[in-house]
Image (cartoon, rainbow, N blue to C red):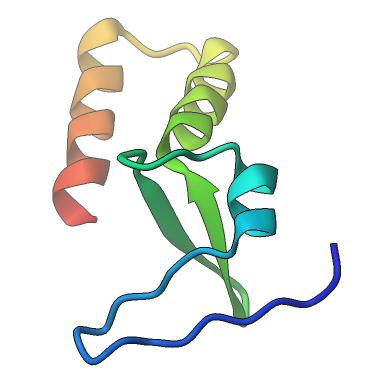
Length: 78
């Protein structure tokens, strides 16, 4: 995908260009997250992020209670 841009509105909102929406697989009403990685901001669909997290936890030796506490903490802080 080549470089695309979007304008910030007076209400500090941006519109995701069609190519970006397609690449992310998001539709109207879907949620996206902005993640700081080093010196850049990455946009992911919330659904994809949750799937990645669940996959990451599969190999960890954590109890269900610990998993839920960490998951809840992540969304309260965000």
